[in-house]
Length: 399
Image (tube, rainbow, N blue to C red; front, top):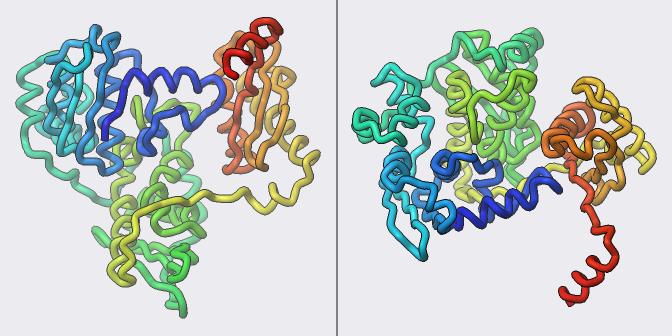
């Protein structure tokens, strides 16, 4: 796959003030990619996203403006930590090609173990041209040891403790006509799913054998989050949902750039292995090899049952609550429309007109999803040109 880096970054910047997703990345695996002021770091984040998505090769064209700010040798060294990298001149810019892509989380695990340093420190040393770091990166990558976690990072500890107080999915499942029992097991822990054979939806989930409170809580919450979704979706995004669901967002992000569960905390490795093993078991029992995932969840029954006025009232109440929590006025947020039942369009006024709009939109959307409905999406109202002459000139030019 070939990507134009400068076009991608420009599309992102053009779209970020009007919506929170679909910034024009041009590839599904880049949905969560965010450009970084450091172009080498930005490109590495892109490679990381491609590797996590299972892509084996990526060609990135880097235009003249960005290429002029890069050290080709440092770029090649940094990209080399993700696979077999090459950089060559093309159309006044550079073409970066990386084959046999591997996830940086695996690289970091090996580098940390060998060097006694964090993987990110070593990757930074690679970018700086340190020979010892390049030597470490060239060593064969070993998979991290997956075991039942006795502890988890502070970002998740509170939610994990609360989940552990009310375990709901521990035990077993009975077979049912028209459904398939799929299991994943590792280190004594087991995840069992009851999957409808006709639509592949998970109609039952259970876990057992967890030897630590952390693993027990993680598996229980995972079961709750994947109920009613296709097993392919559960394998693709179940752990992403789990990490986000448990994270204390008041404490920041676990890693810079793209957040994947395996990079966020080693405690997530066991449930990740189990859900993927359960999918593999389901495929072996049914012969289903389809990997396409077009799952798009619908809003909750409560939201669908609301009238238009009730939806606006519910949104106003949540916006007021979120605004109070984050120290801005709810009067500066106006809901102007609700499109297709899930797209909430807002206008920022008053003190928020000159504030960090993207930050406030993200804060508002996170609050609306958490307090009202996870399916809702937030969009900033398109700003129309109030200069009539300039607007009419633009319309004539477009026609």
